[in-house]
Length: 126
Length: 393
Figure 1: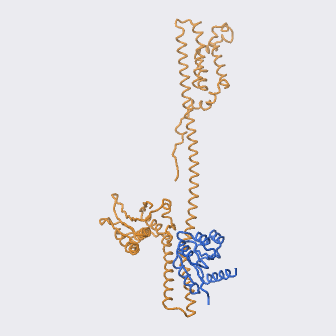
Figure 2: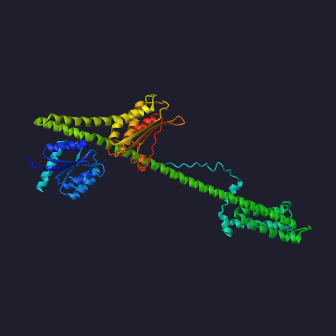
Figure 3: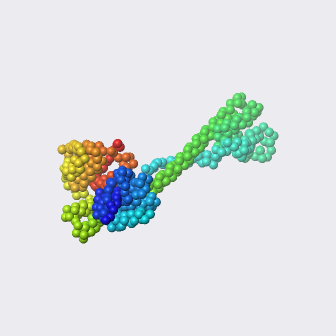
């Protein structure tokens, strides 16, 4: 029996947010979602998460800013970046800020699930 | 912005006279050099020669060759007239000061002869008149030359300024072209980002739900309701992608309008029917001020309806917390028809105003940024004008 691990999905696109939530829930995770960076930061302050799936293009605070601020508040949260429009600069910056990996949309859900699993294994072994 | 000064070539409206040429090769520089200028010494020598010829009658030399030759006596007949040569020369080179000094020297030369040797009863009158006349001519010439030189200088300055201005203009045009290129690249980047965003997000949803469905059906643990919910989500996302492609094609195709006599008020009403739902949702009051006696122009109904729909949707989206949408049709005196779409939204910043009709430019976060670009294209093809007035805040 898998321990319920909490994942936060941040994306302004409802379809992305919901589909990833449904997939990860089905895989046995406990999933919370946020539409904006501001909302994500609010949730992160109140609850503990192991992994955050974060979109880079968000209205208001950008993904990179959210990544920085989450790192400052809860450095233990591992972040996986998802983006519809990959660009080298943001990829490098996200990796520098400690993101685990950088996935390009359309995302294959089993890839994402695998990445989440591997991240958690790495976390536990550390 | 380009600066194109129109200046006629100055050489065309300028007839070069001999005096002007003289002013050219006798530069003003000599006037300030005084005794250091070779011209000063040439003039002095000329003055001495003239004075010698003037006084040769009073010396015994007049009886010996070559002074008694007929050639010399004819030169001597020129008498005071010869002094014009050094005086004019001085005026040419040393201008006002030169002509005055030369005239004074002339006076000094003629006075002794008039007072000592003149056989006439009123000896001073003729030489004084002559000196006055000579100095007058000298001064006239000097001031004229000064004026010409000043004009020449102004002209040179003007031409230099013109050169400089043309250079600026060229630079400006170059940087403008670079800017246009850069903007093209930026809008291409924006286009790519928008398309990527509008296609990849729905695709993510479709991909995730397809695999989820497959997995669940294989595991036989899915209810009919959930399966239908997933399928309907997939369908709506696929429709969204289709719509994007259609918008893109509309924009790229820019089909010519199919003209028929239409009523602009009908266009507005139809566009409003399509958008009323979203206006209602957002607590927006719609005010119609439609002029019922409008002439019926030849236009493409569908295309104009699209323009109005786009404008109304923009207005609605600019007022997320409600507001007032005013739709007005009117006819100008010069048989121009106007449609006005007015909202009480947040307004457009001056910076964005410039990019408003650029394809793929959007401030809404959602949307591809084609609405106004398409509207602009349609109105252009109707030989119409689309104008924006906005106050931020």
